[in-house]
Length: 182
Image 1 (cartoon, one colour):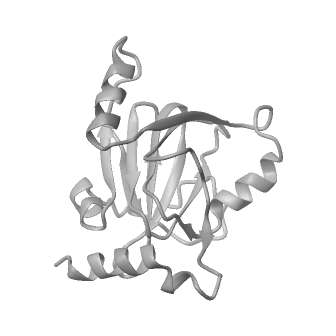
Image 2 (tube, one colour):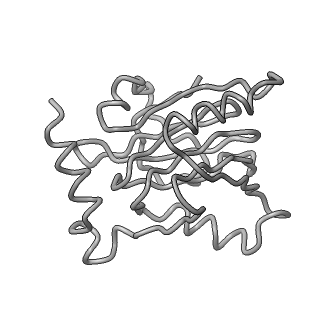
């Protein structure tokens, strides 16, 4: 079961939990209010691929791939980790089904504060197009995730630091939707 909490912005390694003391948990309902959805599909069950197929068909995801993020499998590992952790958005939903390992997705809430979402095997997370987010591994330094796509597989980040990002159509659409959530 996914866990989420308010991100404590310390100078600790990005792969540490960054929890306040005491921890400030965030519920699945709170995540849904910012458009982040969570599902679980047990990867230890023989039929898990059939369940992924059903989920993909329901949401009209046509393509998928599997990414292994660890030093010995990902070219330019250190540079890629820095890229993943830079605050950005995508013009498509970001869908990740965790097969092995663990990592953190940080997402911005309605007040532009970070929420950290810890993902482990069997977690399936959907981030809406236009949401500011970032990703990092946890201290195990490994994750294997299935990426699902509505069209051809692509991963094009639009960094928040760019002057045009806040006016991006998908960002404006998401921000408008978010503002309407009471």
